[in-house]
Length: 110
Image (cartoon, rainbow, N blue to C red; front, side, top):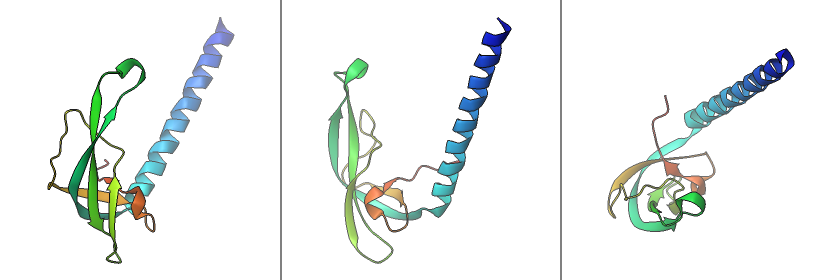
């Protein structure tokens, strides 16, 4: 029984260390991100699969100019159901330097 407890405790510590690593990576990426204002130009409905089948989320498609003045149109990964946005809404986006095609809604991170 003691061995099982030790194995579970070790597994928990390893999971905690992994989560901490992800948190540190996310904070670093957030600090390095380029931020700008975009505008919602469309909403894409994404239907859920698996246990959530039959429900949908709405993902905004946004247009913005990068730091070089080039325009980009991106469908962000984050969606809500029902939609939190309407076409024409301004939204803050963040993207990795040199990768504006990976723009996401800028959610303040701790």
